[in-house]
Length: 221
Image 1 (cartoon, rainbow, N blue to C red):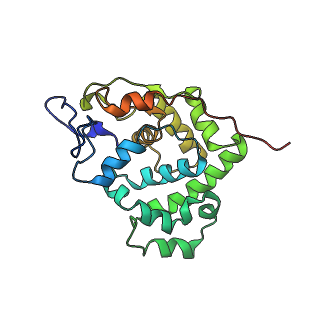
Image 2: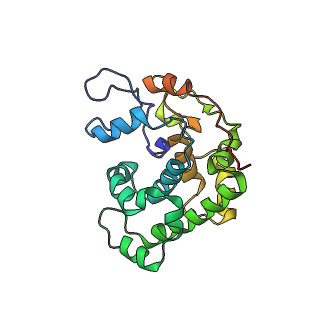
């Protein structure tokens, strides 16, 4: 989802998608209603649900070398194949399940990506046990409050930052794969850790209002 990969001689102006007249970021294709809906309702919205955070982490890893549009079009197939991204279920996948996934035409049938999803689920569980939730660990890097950027053109968007470098390094240290800094930054854009909608996009102001800190995990008495 990181728009910095696109090269253009000039910073393009956001244009309305579809026919509703609303000004958006330049990357969602107006011809793909699913893509536009994702931009309008999910991208940049602060996410604190661990199941959703796990899903998006795995999907961003699956995107490596591909377009986000490709993965988005396969998302429902991924959800069905990976048991709704229930992290505990995925963490217990064995070789038979992995081989079954590699025969599933609805997902990216890359062995390294599929195997890493299972391994990442196990690390994810360990982090939940250590921090109370993956959400608490991740959002702790920004004090629970999204970073509000103010980009005026797509070319200004970074592919990685010092923050994504730190998060990526820690995830790698804990044993996760397909979590390089560029992937992590795209992940943080998607889940609203950073607000990277262009300021001229109608969603920038809307997402900027969603700045409530992450809730602290409840612990057993």
